[in-house]
Length: 477
Ligand code: ATP
Ligand code: MG
Image (cartoon, rainbow, N blue to C red):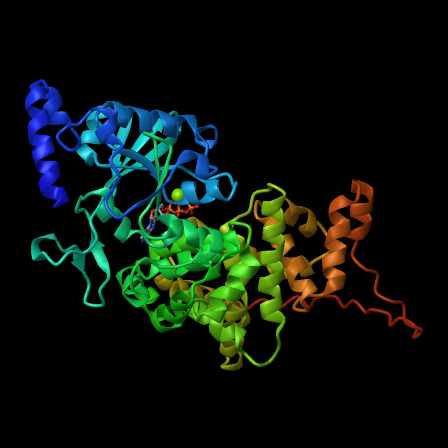
């Protein structure tokens, strides 16, 4: 009914507009504020006095994009994480804009715009090195065969570039708290799915049937954990039940996409809780099968402690605003599986150095199939591992040379972690801590070769014999 009404409204107004503007504004040609403020069907409107999101908290660039889209006659909203975070009084990571302008129309409006993406076509509007992401309203899966996004046989969405209205867009968002729209026209929040109530209750609830939504995009399971930890929200019962049932589907996600998600999961300041939760819901084992196997190894809990200590350290560094690197974390996670594999090889008779080399290659290759690692990260991981035995050499020039290796700092931090959890000598780690801060003279003393202890027995006199000169052979004559 609404569609028919809109059609007639559009028809009437388009006639009154100059041809070019009418063409541009055919998605929302009605310029009077009265009609622009029309309430989307089925939505609850939370007007400005009833919520805490203020324009002052929105980035100037995002505001520019929103106003410009409005000026050109399109709808423009902030949506997703920024609205969610602003409602909680947090600073959003980025501002996502959504509109009824299609990507090509957005590109026409903004000269500083680049269109990206295959699975989702998006516009990035650039301001210097920063950009605002602008998406077009999309439809959820419809019954109309022509409009169904391409799915895999498990039900995963491959392509999803079917544009729609805000009423349709909402159903393809993941969680109710991520589906709140901040309307730049009147500064209200538009809520179709009870997102505001869930926000107040601190609940992560999927829009629609949980199992179906996870099947469509299994990465949503990782997002559920990330938001639950980051916002200190609880998973809704349905969501909680559905994760272990669908966890295995993550194995079908391209490894490069999982790399991005895993990095966000572990390096956003809540690594320890995230790790525990991923394991609790059976997701960790799908992302890191070899690590999961080694963690459940009965022998000791040290490998797990090493991972937890590494995550604690990086959480602390993030809280202090210090940089963190993902290769270090991968090096920690994969260390125990690499060690186990190398030891297996050694017992089967492989030479020690070959065994470690092969084990590192095998473990990395296996892991990369599930969660990809850019080549430079894999190299850095290997370097950190390769430097570990070099810490045992503490005499001569080698310690000095080791300190100038570009990966020394990471390798030393790694040694400390190993020492804390019993897989390296505490004495060696302490020696290196002291060596780094010692002055040159003390460093020289520390690296002097140890004198052999003198024994009581009288030293045997060494007898030097003259080398025998061989008799010339007959041919030399
Ligand atoms: P943050 O940026 O803080 O990590 P976010 O919710 O903004 O969180 P984005 O990846 O920026 O996450 O996505 C923006 C919005 O797009 C989300 O809030 C959600 O509405 C929608 N969205 C993102 N990924 C998915 C997905 N896999 N399935 C459904 N909707 C999604
Ligand atoms: Mg975002």
